[in-house]
Length: 199
Image (cartoon, rainbow, N blue to C red; front, side):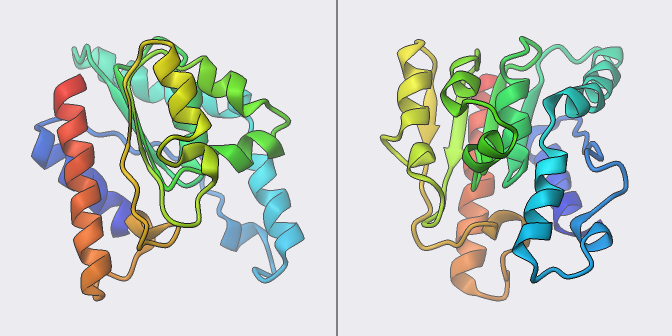
């Protein structure tokens, strides 16, 4: 299952929770659809094609329906990189008790989708945890606009920065590097602690 599956297994074990990993790309991937991965324009076009909340919401709704059918009342959502776009939209739905975004990319995804980031973030209605890295936008950093917008609504927005990490470290960092392994461990524990409080 790779790193994504390992993260889900870790969260399920540590939280004693059911964890669902939806296939938002419906079997597609950038490596399948973009013939030259050094072509930034082609990569951007593929990513833009994935940034449609109208297409993504039904996939997430299926996961929520599955969990509700099992009697699960409190659900959290975790997205990393591109997945923070899903997290922010999902957390405006009223279905979720908490949201976490690791090295969030919704700033760029909102722009690609023609959406206003402040409006998307402003619609969030549950506590949020942001885990930005050194290269992530100012909006998601400590003291950034996302934190300001969410806390102005009276909601918790906890921002834990990883200034030594590169974007993507949680899901594809080199765990043979002790500094990366350390921060992956810290990030996972931070997510677990946050979810334990808010679910």
